[in-house]
Length: 67
Image (cartoon, rainbow, N blue to C red):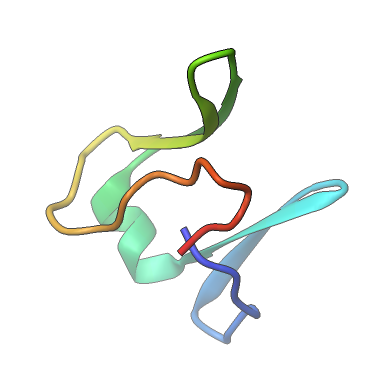
């Protein structure tokens, strides 16, 4: 997950006040994508899952700053 500006090939989903931007070609590979936020004593952050996981990627976002 990264901060980015929409490009011509992206689909933008508006969940006011947040917007999610997904590359249209990548969405076909991922299927349904879910974004959840966990806030507990032991761990807080975003969890992103997809119907069809794709290799690679980055670590979770637990510090409030996503890489």
